[in-house]
Amino acid sequence: MTRRHFFHTAMALIAAHPLAQAAGPLATGPARGRMPVLFIGHGSPMNALRNTPFTRHLGALGRELPRPRAILVVSAHWAAEQPLLSAVARPETIYDFGGFPTALYGVRYPSPGQPALAQQVARQLKAAGGGLDMQRGLDHGAWTVLHHMYPQADIPVIQLAMSTRLRMDEHVALGTELRALREEGVLVLASGNIVHNLRLTDETPGVQAYDWALEFDSLVKTALLQRDMPSLLAQDARKHSLWHKAHPSIEHYVPLLYALGAANENDAISFPYTGFEEASLSMRSVRFG
Image 1 (cartoon, helix red, strand yellow):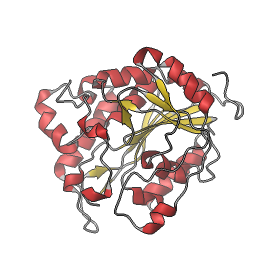
Image 2 (cartoon, one colour; image 1 turned 60 degrees about the horizontal axis):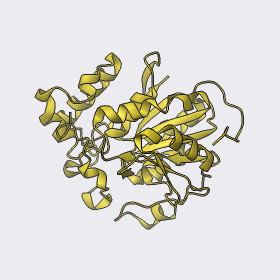
Image 3 (cartoon, one colour; image 1 turned 90 degrees about the horizontal axis):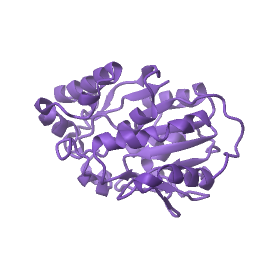
Image 4 (cartoon, helix red, strand yellow; image 1 turned 30 degrees about the vertical axis):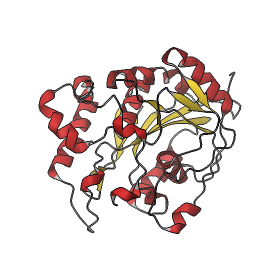
């Protein structure tokens, strides 16, 4: 993977960088108790076409989880000034990248939207400026993951844009507003990467992850298990050089903060998948509950 492979969103300049700033019931069936929360390391868009241990773990998650009534995705690839909700009845598949094989642009993920849910969440986030986007489809942070988890594309999906105006702790706070959705059978799925440095990717077959990448991935794993919020919010200045190497821009880390907010202190934390792609992309998945 090279830098030309990805469309760099405005989130690359997000103000929340750790060194910059420390409608009615759903209509798709009965809820089955509280849903877990997921963070998925999505990596390259090419994962949509691959059959690998990573993509197979996504399929296993889709089969193992309680079937959601709807899915709310917070993706590294949608940022806006305010926390917008996609409210399209039939969201398009967005190809927000370039330089990939033609076959990738033929993949469609024709899941329905859920405008009523988008309106409901926008009302919940009104104090934070929550609004609606009536055109937004599903970016590759959403559909390349869901393509493997729910290949029938028969579960309604909406997305929540990360606000570029929020600090890291404010993203977590906004995530707490999503907790109640879990009781309504909504799966909160955050999609990014715990380590994401496209400048240093290495496509050599069998390449090992960089030592610094392993160190950062381990730091976040330990902080999650210990519920060490100062570490997760980059409040230790001694680690800032490591943060800069793991995230030259912070957009792929921020979705984890929404998952942290949507989870609670009683949720067990597990890691359905661990590993790296191309030396500098952590593919770690995190399950809360």
